[in-house]
Length: 202
Image 1 (spheres, rainbow, N blue to C red):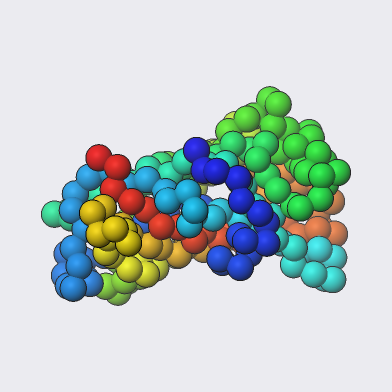
Image 2 (tube, rainbow, N blue to C red):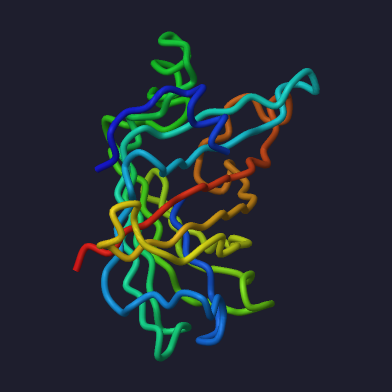
């Protein structure tokens, strides 16, 4: 699971993601097949919404695990699995966090985990595409689509571990998951934003 980091760090750094790329993409570096997991210091899953038209607040999850099973011979067969500790939601305000954990929103005592399981990858360019999958919140599963970008393939600074970096974004309706308090005064649409670096673990 991801170590806790500050909300401000998450926002400055700018999820559940993998970019579908061709085997020829990023010819200067090639990622070997295997399982990749999040680099704790460089992995962020957060979301933003409209608050009565006044602002677009950012909230994030501090504790999550991402597993990508990468197959360079058949990239579209690669898979992504994300598990989030729902109670790790962080607004930067303790009282608001307590409300977000309540039955009005995520009801984390009853539904402690949020999960994403990929169902498909499609390619738009060598470095961009879409990731589809099943998102489960409060026991409700809905299909979602993320626009993904491969930022870089390389190795860690020590040069001994293969590494990948991705950005992803998508939109969901929180009412689809019974997280509909204060709609429409607080927007039903929520933008999911993922910035993540992954390192080969197996």
